[in-house]
Image (cartoon, rainbow, N blue to C red; front, side):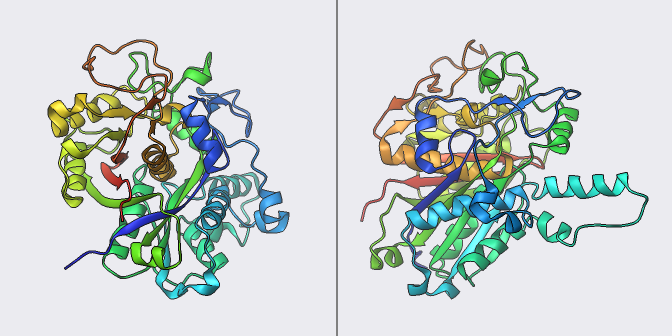
Amino acid sequence: MEFKRVVVTGLGALTPIGNTVSEYWNGLINGVSGAAFIKSFDTTHFKTKFACEVKGFDADGFLGRKDARKLDPFVQYALFSTEEAVKDAGLDFSKLDTNRIGVIWGSGIGGLKTFLDEVTNFAKGDGTPRFNPFFIPKMIADIAPGHISIKYGLRGPNFSTVSACASSNNSLIDSFNYIRLGKANMFISGGSEAIINEAGIGGFNAMHALSTRNDDPATASRPFDLDRDGFVAGEGAGTIILEELEHAKARGAKIYAEMIGGGMSADAYHMTAPHPDGLGAALVMRMALEDANLTPADIDYVNVHGTSTPIGDPQEIKAIQDVFGDDIYRINISSTKSMTGHLLGAAGAVEAIASILALKNGIIPPTINHFTDDPSFDPKINFTFNAAQKRDINIVQSNGFGFGGHNASVIFKKYQD
């Protein structure tokens, strides 16, 4: 069977370092940190008092106060980034077959704020269940693609992928496969997350997963630095329009890049810890390369998962060394989580956008906040520390790994007709 080609025709982003794709990209290449003290709730009694929050987002202004109140923030973020992507792609759905346009969306947790608010209100009451009628439809993870399809009248495949921090990479892979198999012409794909609240920060603190560098939040996300002490929570959304090539050409769409492969694997090791030898991570990168008919020598840049955790970062580097061998010295590696924090289920989409823009612009975003070399890492590896680097890039790979041992890796290539 001959697969159809799949291209990227639209991008949208809402991130801790910019509320549009252009703002996000400028933040990335200039090494801007999105971390600051949390403003959305009182952190007096919390171990971690900072995060990478979205800044200046006006849900009421975007949706109207009445409609905004019916939606959890993770859905608000999804709709916002998708509107930018739809406009960027120049889509007029009245002229397209909407039965062949779908939405696949990733979120690791879904409506955590809604769940927290409703259960807290119940606990404060007299035991009478006075739950908001929007409680369940605001909370469930699959409601984001549902609202996107409703807004634009899209009747193609519609569902949510939930695989923790690999969720939106999985949404991209599923969309890619449906299109190349001829099951749809286009997908709105991506992910969103909104966990910066008492339950999210408190829960991750209880796991000892978050950085507690309260004396210097802006430099707390330190992937591959000797003194890294945990990830920094982030929030936001990323939307990518994936489209069958001939469909895109027929409507005169601009093309950012071509998606050429994706891999999925499991660590089969531990509930939260990655395999110490990086077995699942190495497997998923190999699977993505095989899917794209590539060898490690074809890759120019890897946007790594790189969360800034003591055990996660070494595991990923072991995997890359295993897969790439001596080619590891030729490629650039960087973790954009050093700037955005970790957007959990939205991370894959937001980082795929960074990878696509690196490909398009010939610039590798940096891994900021590097102060002290970790002697366990080979010093010849190019981590793109502290400053963006210009480079001719033809193919990029982007990794996402999640609790439960979920791994997903996607590959994009510079488009050639």
